[in-house]
Amino acid sequence: MTAPLTKADFIRSVPELSPADVVARAKTRGIRLTLQNVYATRHAEKLRTAASATVTRFTLEERPAGDPERAFQRLALRIGITRAEKILASLDAAIDADEPKT
Image 1 (cartoon, helix red, strand yellow):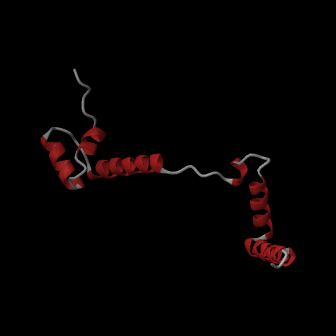
Image 2 (image 1 turned 90 degrees about the vertical axis):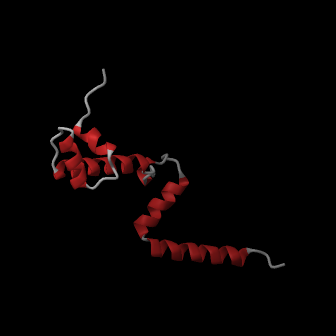
């Protein structure tokens, strides 16, 4: 014996139908639905699908403590990106000046 079809299962079984058509088809099968049931179920399904597709990203606090990249990022955020870019540009210029000319 199979489990009875829930309202949500029925709604998910006809994704191509408009909400009004889903309610009408459910009524012919003896299932009492409202438009709000359809909207809520479809919204929950969309959220569930989107949540499973999200990419996990590391925050600065989740990286290993000894990570020099993490320390650099935190410092750049602390002093400001624009200021960090200026410091890196001056460092780059100093490195270029120290390289022997060939």
